[in-house]
Length: 88
Length: 176
Image (cartoon, rainbow over all chains, first blue to last red; front, side, top):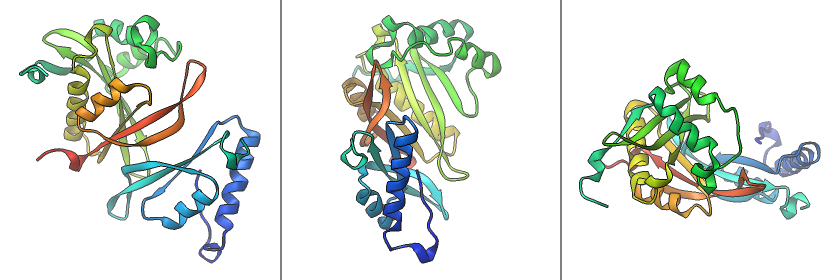
């Protein structure tokens, strides 16, 4: 999963709420066991949001993205149906 | 590792007769090993891909692991897309039961990484294996891959979700 908020909507906690709504929705309406999110290693705001939404940091995926003229590392997070934050 | 062993191991395109080995290593539970028996699935797919492009396509490729003229198994890679215009390879290996535990997996995966970095522009090559598949973890580490972390429940095998260890090699890891 991923998210994009308008500039004026950032930094207010909406991202965390939106992640929770989406993971609740997906676990309710699909049989997926795992939901993952990957963000750039330097996108600390999104790391915080994913952690607050109950995701677990699994590792750094080196050189996984190309953006703005350079390869970028990604950080992978996951939420399992059985995790406490998913009500498991 | 025996001296000179590295020189004897090559990767070669799949010949028609090799398809029997590829099928045995993906469809015969007695030959796949514990971690690669995932049920029967599209049994004719390797033959179809072979008829189309010799198992060397834009998104997926297979090469035989050969020592002298003996077939030891195969290596496989497939494309993973990330950002627009950016992709990398995910690789895997299957060796015949009698070819395991001899260091061939390490050599073959190192050879494949060298081949893919040489002939494609990717920055990253990744490989994943189950947390209990210690032999493959050792092989990847000896081949020069770096352990990145454990991805939870990314595999389904034999009635249960399985955690997998992720490894990568990036172009700048290569010596010289």
